[in-house]
Length: 281
Length: 250
Ligand SMILES: Nc1ncnc2c1ncn2[C@@H]1O[C@H](COP(=O)(O)OP(=O)(O)OP(=O)(O)O)[C@@H](O)[C@H]1O
Ligand SMILES: Nc1ncnc2c1ncn2[C@@H]1O[C@H](COP(=O)(O)OP(=O)(O)OP(=O)(O)O)[C@@H](O)[C@H]1O
Ligand SMILES: [Mg+2]
Ligand SMILES: [Mg+2]
Image (tube, rainbow over all chains, first blue to last red):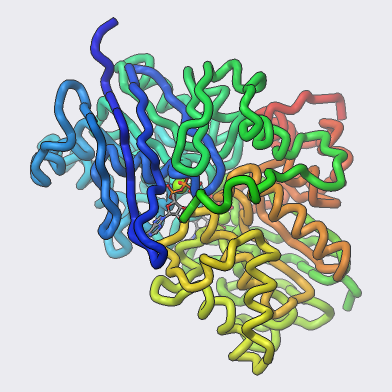
């Protein structure tokens, strides 16, 4: 087997709290090839922190340590902040969980996508505009020329998510980390947007880390799945085997999902008392 | 006048020159749970915003608990009807702790017993007391959304407008919030108008649903039609199929 695209060994993220430092990610290890890896797990289990630490985007006073973190042979831990910035966006992109928070409120949507593109590739104005509109259309935005002129507060929740996805895909990165990229999309658009991402994985050999609460979605769109609980990976499986997962925590998550022909009066919930002391600081 | 909790008649909403909601009419009965589903950008959030006075350019009729709505937010209305926003960052003040955020509506409306009410509400939405003095950026996405829901419930409103209340939550917290919403409805007869793109959530919580596309309601159906895959309009059926449902002839 060739060397993996991403190798993470012993990743720990620590935050100081009133009760002393707390590890919100606890020494996890995994590798990623040119494949689709899903990360699921309950809220606060450390999924976003894991994604962000790969890009070294953990805000102070949070601290990241690892025995080893390499991307395509590059040691991420020893890169300067400047080298890291060159890598971000160009080779590794991240779609953040909260699109509106990540978009610049005083720039139009079109300007922001154009900026994402020119930082990595110089293009004539006209061609730039065409690429931006084509990308908005690719993420199934109706009326792209109107939307390109809107500010982030003027777009709907699902449009904001697709704009973020457009910005992150336009430089054609080698690795895409997508944190709940489609949680605000209707199911039909969701499928279309995931197909675009999927094309880049199969066509261009992009690696994908898909962080999501949606177990069905992850089992449909990924090759492999990691299940996280309070900062640890508790189970790994082939995506197609998710419904036969063994760990009681994973089984609890599956049972908690409502079904289309739902007739339960109450949904089963996880017994939090078994982990609230350790989890989530 | 009707005795519906929410009454919309020929509601049309615009932002400047663009009309985004066209001629929408429906009633939500007292104690009913009604879902708005449909295409992204089709105007679902806009309808909730118009009801709560945040999208002022509308024509038609909106009334809530028998009172006609004006075109702006007002304080008395806040005691009757509260909205939970789609985006939990936007609705929580970044420099206010969870405690301040929850106690504030009580203070504004001159309600006492704040300390114990805040504690009870945190417990009700499944947040441990240690989160009480944290700021929003110190919480995960799902934890933040639970604070937003808790805040809306502080004034014990009769009507809740819920914009994707669980789409940022993992399935286990979602289950807790859905159970909580169901319990509040059962015990206090609350009325919900809820936007969601998750059809199984509609099956669990709602009595009826309206399907929207391009700013219009294309179908209003009872939840049984959804559960049994018998929605009638082509777009509704497309959504159903994309959710993994098995279609039955309508
Ligand atoms: N600045 C901070 N100080 C202390 N704890 C923090 C801080 N930021 C995040 N945390 C904690 O880190 C834990 C992991 O957060 P993370 O955002 O990775 O969760 P997540 O798995 O992405 O959850 P969600 O599904 O809700 O987005 C959470 O319990 C959160 O409360
Ligand atoms: N402040 C605004 N100014 C201009 N246009 C706006 C504004 N807010 C929303 N819009 C437009 O109104 C339309 C409907 O938006 P709305 O947020 O109601 O959609 P939605 O059905 O809630 O979609 P989603 O499921 O993606 O959240 C969109 O085309 C959006 O661009
Ligand atoms: Mg997260
Ligand atoms: Mg919306």
